[in-house]
Image (cartoon, rainbow, N blue to C red):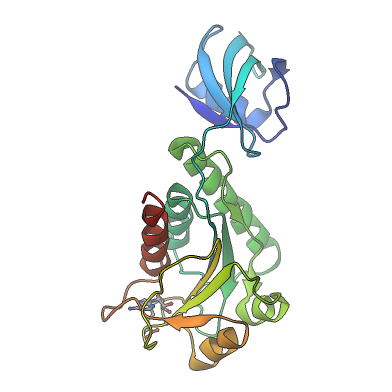
Length: 240
Ligand code: SAM
């Protein structure tokens, strides 16, 4: 059944006009009055709905019944990634959404190839939020991954509050001696580097904010593979 994110609160049964983004999807699929669809607003529940009217630009639907499926991870996982360049960041956002991450924090470090500020940074962020939204529609997520504003790694670390008791922080570093620990924490914040890696000074700065340096073994993983490998391990670990 078609499943669309709606960027307006869905609160009670009844008719409404779909906002333009969701309406476009319905028109592209050429749905007709009476056709069934699922809508969600990112707050947790999803709605069984049906199309009631298809206009030239306006689509009306009736919300029938809300259900609250459990498809989110129990843990809140934030991937703080010094952004890889090209379309690898799109890939990372899509896969991180499918695997259940709560948030991606895009960062710029000393060795970053991709540097974004001002309007370019805002545009990229909303592009990535769109990628996360499409991946949430496809994967059945009821709460789409949040893409945070692009920041310099040093500024992000400086503003980060002390870790909470239930939080584990790790920085992925091929030079670290420790493997990943068993993950009992209910919040995980994972920092990973760009193509050229994190500098020693950046790893030390992260350690100063409570990040434990961890290794993923003897092979060097690409900047998009490394955080996704850990996220997969954590997400699949929740299946028992
Ligand atoms: N030459 C770079 C270096 O030595 O850091 C390689 C960077 S790697 C392509 C990109 C990022 O993925 C690294 O900064 C690190 O965060 C993570 N990473 C890749 N392989 C890793 C491994 N085996 N252990 C821990 N982290 C790894």
